[in-house]
Image (cartoon, rainbow, N blue to C red; front, side, top):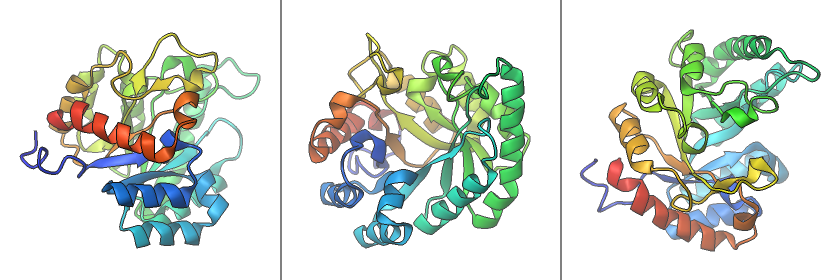
Length: 276
């Protein structure tokens, strides 16, 4: 645990924009600044709605840092290289050190998951040079196996590290509690990851799952995940960056953004900070 955590509980807290998906970007940035939240994780679509230059100015004027930009990747869906390079340009313009890569699932009509993973590896390899040139790191996000067909054929942290370790530290991983909590090897793989942990994201696993599994994340503390061991492992591995709360949940999205922000900040202090 860091010695200043009790005195500065929000020092490493970041609101991932998706947690308050219907909160306009300018309002979310202003809300974070007003609440003493130092960082925000941005998504490309809301940034595009206001314009890249405007978004960058809003963040800078509010004195926030951008903990990550989501998302690049989807390497199995065809020719995505140009769009991923554009995402790197956007991350650099926003001052984001990390571009989150959602790997992509099976190509349309395919059942070849090994082939999908090969496409993902090739796509990442092609981005390493452009990422290095722009000073942005590539964070592979392993996803829960229920998303292997349509969103992420990389299902474990070990698989993501196997891919990342083929490159220098331009390539790393996302540790997301929702996607990884179930894995009996996750703590050992977090220790293995070390400096390749580029983002730590938290949300909870709630049951029963809703009909749309993509919207099945709960606020930390509302579900089944024990955040203490995972957070302690991430800290022991040397990660000192921001901790993003990233929740996809229709009921949460229906609430006022400032209300949700206050609640997730309090959950962060209660469930995460004591283990950093």
